[in-house]
Length: 212
Image (cartoon, rainbow, N blue to C red; front, top):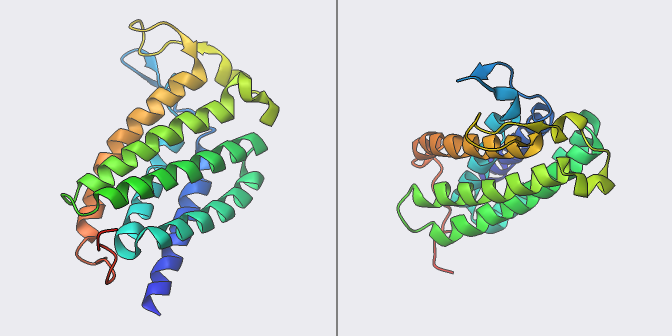
């Protein structure tokens, strides 16, 4: 059945995005921008992870929140399993927790806004999910208070300047979180382009857009 094929594709895409992001989040950017070390602000995972919200929103648009939650659950289970092999257990736990809660918030917000202007649901949902995901992931993965999950990354908790001289120094994991969310906002806006381009092809199934 064509519907099952689409759902399988969504699951595979979700798994690939999360596993890649779990690996890439361990590598800070190199170089400087306006005298600011990019390694103090961003990891490479910030550029790949927002694609997960695009996958969730397309699934939600086409099949509704029930199927979207199944895709998130399937992607979550497979991705966490791979992540334990590809990264540290603490990163895997933090990523899985943040992913699941952030994606479920995205699904809920999207579903509430789905009958409004076409861009509002994917944009607001992805930003809300990204904010919660970022706060949960970086806290669980690097904050000393959560060291019970696993050892702290010494580099992540070193102090580093945020936005150069404009703000006081903060632990590097906090500056990563700020930079990460800023990139997620930017990528979330950019992801409206493929979402809009696919709208005519991935039309909602009958009954999906009926009022709850």
